[in-house]
Amino acid sequence: MIQIGIAGIPAAKKGKGTDVGIRYLSEIGLDAMEVQFVRGVFMSSDVAKRVGETAKELGIKLSVHAPYYINLAGSKETIEKSKKFIINSALRASEMGGSIVVFHPASYSENTFELVKSACEEIKAKIDKSVHLGLETTGRQSQFGTLDEVIKITTMVEGTVPVLDFAHIHARGNGSLKSKSAFGKVFDRFDCDEFHIHFTGVEYKNGNEKKHMPIDDEPSFVHLAEVLVERGYDATVICESPLLEVDALKMKGIINVKR
Image 1 (tube, one colour):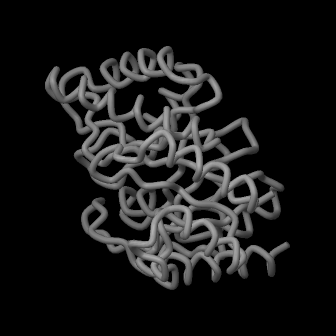
Image 2 (image 1 turned 180 degrees about the vertical axis):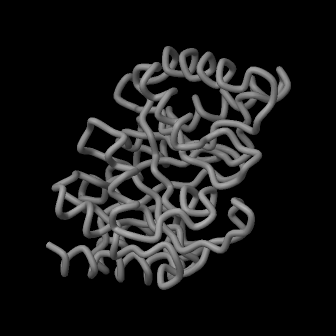
Image 3 (image 1 turned 45 degrees about the vertical axis):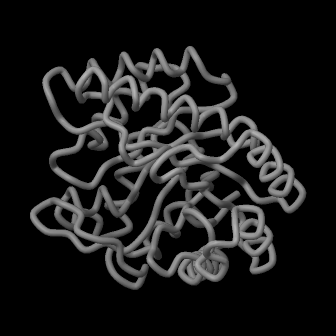
């Protein structure tokens, strides 16, 4: 099964709340939402449970993106604050029935790998076992989160999973995803057949993401769709394009054509 959704509340319902956004996604035929805790985890437990009930009723798959200020390899104070962000995000994910909390792991510093690994082990021990920690591939040379680094952490720490952000992989590789074969080689690195994916067009320079673009820009969603369908993967694909639900519906249409 391939489920297509968006990051955050639909553009057409901006400011109306997560419940309204979920109902709108169901009405237009999308399948998933990644609830965005951009600056902090301000959603209450009661709201999270209500959101989960709405999503369950309508068949919308939920995930959570933890705040963007996370750095598990920063100062001691920053690391502790980051761990709390992820733990609180995971609690809300559990309350709303989500199975993954996504985060950008760190910026590079001394001993980055060991710091990220240790923090993930500590966090995983403190959260609901049904919620996975999703380490996202990152799009800048200064950020921990190459494909190799994400694979290494998720292989070593139980309960962690990769989140394949193909715009980030493409940008960091200075335009590395030019063909169906290039997408296939990313998936060849994994033994599993279930994936959580982010997708958008992207503007980049010198191996660094500059900004998100509509999906008509590079990389090509058609290439990704062909790999997902031909290999029979189970995947949740979250659209992060500036056009959100408009491009997500385009993506769903491409998937349906390739089936």
